[in-house]
Amino acid sequence: MPSKRAMLGWPRRGSAVPETLLAGPAQAPLAGRVRVPGDKSISHRAVMLAALAAGETRIEGFLPAADTLATARIMEALGAKVIWESEDKTRLRVLGTGMRLQAPSAVLDAGNSGTCARLLLGILAGQPFAARVDGDASLRRRPMRRVTRPLAEMGARFPEGDEHLPLVIEGRRPLAAITHRPEVPSAQVKSAILLAGLFAEGTTIVEEVRPTRDHTERMLPVFSQPIVREGRRVQLHPKGALQAPVMPLVVPADPSSAAFLAAAALLVPGSRVELVEVGTNPRRDGWRRILARMGAEMTEDRRRLLGEEPVADFVVESVPQLKGVVVHEAEVPDAIDEFPVLFVVAALAEGVFELRGAAELRVKESDRIAVMAENLAKMGARVQERADGVRIEGVRTLQGGVELDAQHDHRIAMALAVAAQRASAPVRIRHAAEIATSFPSFVELAQAIGMQVRWEDA
Ligand code: S3P
Image 1 (cartoon, rainbow, N blue to C red):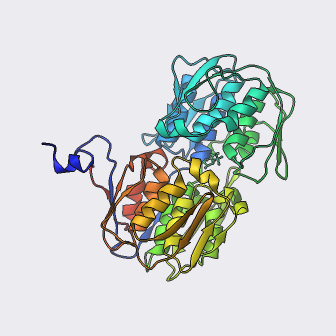
Image 2 (image 1 turned 30 degrees about the vertical axis):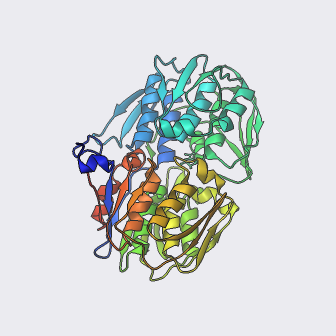
Image 3 (image 1 turned 90 degrees about the vertical axis):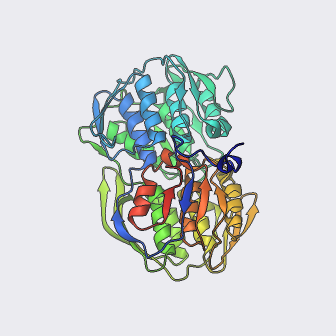
C-alpha cells in the first residue's frame, strides 16, 4: 500500500532535490541587509564573451546558478577554459578561444535557460561546424523561430527543424550581415543577432520596436568591439577578435532576484530591508517604477557604476496600503521578469491592477499569466486572466492552508513564497526546485530577513 505522502503525490522524504516549499505567514516585520546573487543576464553574457575573446577574462560576482553554470559548461565544451577561483563559484577566470571555438563532442544542454539557448545559437551560427542544442522539458516548449529565422537569413542551417529544441545548427563563416526588426521586443533575440554579427561580413543592424535590456551592447565595447546605438537601432561592424578586458568584470546583484525580497518587505507590516549593489539599468528597472506608482517607497543610495552597469543600494519599507495601477504594453519589457511578484503585490493592493500587452509572459519558463492566476485564485485573490495580461482586484489577506503548484518555474515559486507571507496560514508550493536556476540561495536569504519559508523535504 503506498504511503499517504506518495498518494498525495508529494515527493518522498529525503529525495535528493528538495522541491516543495512550505511558506508563510510572516511572524514579525522583515529586517536586514542583503546582497542578492549576481545578475543572471550579465553572468551569461560575461562568460560567453570571455570564451570568445583572445586572452584571459576575470569575472567577479558571477551568478552560481543552474542556468549560468550551464552556459559556463557549454563554453568549456566549445574550447574555452574556465578556472573557478572561489568555492562558491562567484569568481572565475576564463581563457578565451580568440574566436576559434572547437566543435563539441556532445549535445550542448542549456537546461532551463532561454537566454543560454538563444544567445548560444547566435554564436554557433558563425562557427564552421554543426552542434546539437537541447534543454529541459520547459525549454523544449519555448519558441525558437524568433532566433532561428534571422540566423538562417544570415546563413546558418537547421537541418532537423528550427522551431523547438532539440535542434541541430550548422554554422557558416562568414555570415551575411542583416538588418533585423524583431517582431517581439526581446533582448535574447537582439543579442543572438549581434553575437552572430561578430562573424558576419558587413554591418549587422537590429532595430527594436521597443527597447529591451542592453547588457550585450554595454559589454561588447568592454571586449574592444564597438557598438553604434541610435535610439532603438543597434549596429555592429566586426572589428576582429574580441579582446579580454584588463580589469575584472564585476557583476551587479540581480534586480530580478532583489524584487522578491523587496516585495516581501513592502507587504509585511513594519518591515525595513536593505538591498545592496543592485543593478539599476533603466531597462531592468520597470518593476521599481511600477511599484512606485502603486505607492511603494524605496530610497536609493550610493549610486555608482560597476563597469558599464549602474547599481545602487535600496532601502525598502513596508507600506500600509499599496494601490492598483494600469500597466501598459510599453512598460512590459523593462519589467518582463518581475510580473509574477508584481501580481502578488497587486493581489494585496487596494483597487484594481491591470496589465495589458504582455502575451509574451505566456511563453516564459511557464505560462506565467495562467499559472499565477490559478495559484493566486487558490489563495482567494480575485484574478481575471486575459489573453495578453490580467485584471486583479485587491483583497486584504490571502488564504493559507492550500497547496500551490509552481509548475517548475523559478519565478512563480519565489513569487508564491512572497504571497504566503501575507496568507492566513502556511501554504505548500510544489515543483519549486527550479529556484536553483536563478537564485539558489533564495530560501537562505529570505530566512535571513525573517521570511517564513523552508524546504519541506530537505
Ligand atoms: C533575458 C531577456 C528576457 C528575459 C530573460 C533574460 C536576457 O527574455 O525575460 O529572463 O538575458 O536577455 P526575452 O528577451 O525573450 O524577452
